Amino acid sequence: MPSSYQLLDSADLQDAIPLQTLESDPLTLKTSLDSLALDSLSEKTLSEWEALLIYKKAVIFSVVLSTAVIMEGYDLVLLGNLYAMPVFNAKYGVLGADGTYQIPAAWQAALSTGVATGGILGLFVNGIASERFGYKKTMLVSLFAMIGFIFIPFTAQSLFTLLVGEILCGIPWGVFQTLTTAYASEVCPVQLRGYLTTYVNLCWVIGQIIGAGVLRLMLERNDEWAYRIPFAIQWLWPVPIIIGTMLAPESPWWLVRQGRYDDAKAALHRLTSVDYPETKINDSLLDMIQTNKLEKSRESGVGYLDCFKGIDRRRTLIVCMTWSIQSLCGSAFMSYSTYFYEQAGLSTSYAFDFSMIQYALGFIGTVGSWFLMGYLGRRTIYCYGLFGLTILLLCIGFVSISGFSNAGLIIGSLLLIYTFAYDLSIGPICYSLVAEIPSTRLKTKSIVLARNTYNAVGIVNSIITPYMLNPTALNWKGRTGFFWA
Image (cartoon, rainbow, N blue to C red; front, top):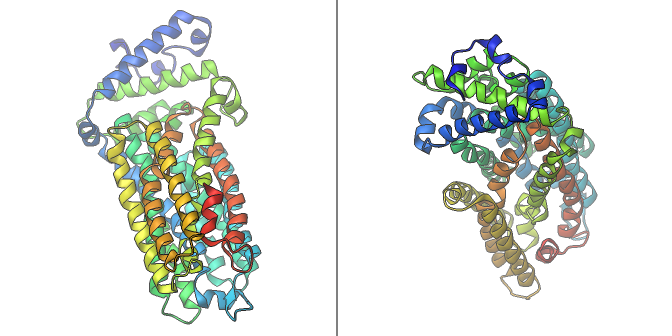
């Protein structure tokens, strides 16, 4: 950016290069693009360590907000694995021909679909609310709503009440799914963006580990608190995250889109180290202003329909397909892990132990993906990861029809490898891709559309997977691997 712009005040910044000039003067547009490229090049010359030292506060705030995703990962494991808990089945299930209680496959599908339905509603709400009111206010309202909604599943006396609670809880979870990713990509420099967007996947895994551990501890209880305590534990997350969100600055990119340049500059000061030069802050702010104006010159607005116009249509389709692959690659096995292990022949306690090991490997895999990103491209990791998962699913299917006496144990081991491979590739890399491909003005809505595509596919999965695994329905057990392969 030309040095003459570095000391301009807010009013001067607003008129630095008028939008109409960019629209009517191709030479000015090219010059602006060239100057932005020089600024971006200057920032990209920072090493990852240097970027961390400068933006350490941005990293902390991003991590705090992303931690909200732990709640969704926790509930995903909670709901799927409660079906393997005898006391839960005795409360809400029906007596089967074998003398054991089971939650009917139709209700399993309804409960899982309810979560996804609430998530879709929350995603669309986030796409509108976060652009109108800002990331902070949207996040805070969602967290307070989460505190109230948890009362419903905690006190539920019937499957219908539990379904209502899951739908309502799904709404703030839908907000967390995309707001945290968009915030991380907007407050952090490009050197750290991949790590902090994939950290969202790590939060999912952490939630799954906690969920599996809590359920394992509750397995010895024979009263209603065996499943009510796991619901109550969800109240632990919102309060500290609310405090962290209140302390966090608003996204400077959002403030620029609102024309609040003084506030955007103040946010940049709060996101960077105290000794970061004032001229660099001004350069970053001007970079945002000019980028916003350049994108305005190419787009008619920031609505959902704009995601399907011009070059943004291709970007939208790419991110939608990228995220839907997470559901299409057989990841439903992981959310039904303990239930699947039981149906594959493992004892209840052994099944829960396996699931805890499984999610621990997922944690290791996600951290491992951070090292892979330093050597391989995102697309390479994604494609090879998908190929490896396909091979593992085929192996699971063949073991299931082999007739081995220890087939359940072999399938459980293959699922451990599958989880590690998934969280080394498809799981975390997806978050980095969907955050980096859209334009800045349409980023939130593009991520919302992508995540809703994922949820739509997930609804189909949540309907058919219980029927595949439930012994009162198709009872495919490990043969389900053939379907997903």
